[in-house]
Length: 399
Ligand code: ADP
Ligand code: MG
Image 1 (cartoon, helix red, strand yellow):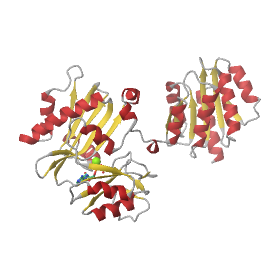
Image 2 (spheres, helix red, strand yellow):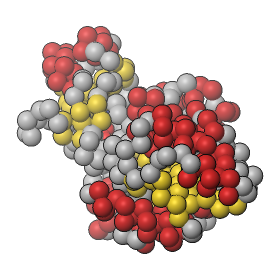
Image 3 (spheres, protein in one colour):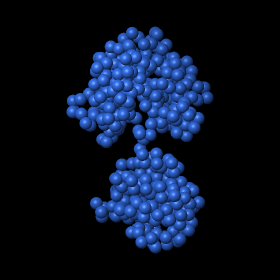
Image 4 (cartoon, helix red, strand yellow):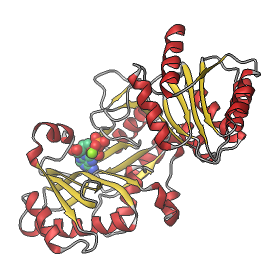
């Protein structure tokens, strides 16, 4: 689960981490109210969306030369006019995709005199099985280019979970950032605080970009992105309360209500499969046949007719879907239950795209009978390869 920048900063502040003052706002009036509580004379108005790259982003509704999603304002009036211009419009950044994200919330924060920008993030490094700190002297808006063109400017420091964060880790971070004296001390303290926050809050990722050195020699967190391990959210009610469903894919929210594992993808063939492994294999074989899956969907082991119906409806709501492949191995889950769900859902939603079904396992004959007698144009397949070929051919036919 992701949260907004202003929420992440609230959490970090609880760990004693230095954050510039700021206030969230959902209207220009609220933005002005927030700005009045700040010392000024420089303010920054920041779009709050669950995506990075806001500074270099473009608003769909505004002229191409209009400013992006992070704007400096030199007066309260400028805070107001920038807020007016941003709210309700769609911000497109490298991370949002072409459709962009509607900006419904802003963060008005203190403008900081920046001497230098650094990069510092923590993540779960699967290769080493440890939390890693990734740092670079080249922080700011071009960190992706740094990673691509000059990877030697990025240092990774891993932390043994049995040992925890040690002073030498902090020194290594400060050294990698080429800091000395008081700045190095601030950096060591910050690295330790961030590690504690990361572990205590069960984060999946915590990124500070930029971490800045101010003109008067302070290290400040200017931007932060935080995401959490969903499986540990039950331990953090305060974090769970920060969920902003308007930032999430409505289909994924709907799927979670029925306990379905659903991830939207970019292709045109909807998949309904039981078991994550079979779902992955199904997606692979669709690709092998020259098409792309529209989603990953695992209905799980003990699905009911209702669950299958819900899954079907979620797939069909995606306008990109031009055909559906159902691939079910009936073990615990019986083929006739699946078949009933498919028929029920197809009738409920007036199925308008080709449907290929491959059933195998418990009660397969009963299942096939239900499909055959449904009066629906369902194409039956014998195995995985056959099913993939058939759905790709069906979709090409209608294209
Ligand atoms: P994003 O990463 O989404 O583009 P950031 O918050 O990192 O958004 O802002 C982009 C850039 O704007 C930063 O790299 C920094 O140079 C500048 N910036 C952001 N916040 C402030 C601030 N409070 N004061 C001064 N400059 C800022
Ligand atoms: Mg940033």
